[in-house]
Image (cartoon, rainbow, N blue to C red; front, side):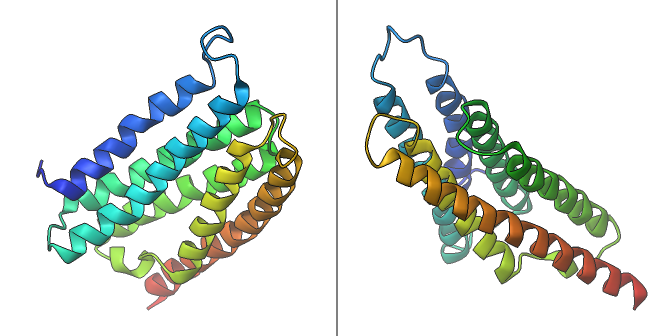
Length: 190
């Protein structure tokens, strides 16, 4: 297993997940201000999202890409997003259908990429722009929803905008899944 700074950032993102999760289960007498927990959770999530962009950028810029890094990066992303979505559903900040669509798509596309790789055709389901737009909407939605559910006057606004962005992310999620499936089908018809 190669070690370099971009892979270290990816591991850091994975290590943030249990800390992020524990924030939601802290006893009220440890941190009584629930808004503080929301802000901490949002900051941890934002840090994970930033390292997601940063590790890929640095790996390409410093020519430190590796097959292990290419494997670990999407795993870290999917774990963080899935955990955040489950916690948002559990705290009634978003709808279960959004989590089902996004997590279901991630499992489907991961399985498709694995299968295509076994067939020697991994590049036919490489990341497309639609997937990047989906990710941007999804990250912004999760960040805003993490800030919601508080006593702040802006909380309701964060929840509304977050769920609108989550709906957009779900539409882009389905669209991108259909795009990737179409690319895979086209590859096997050729």
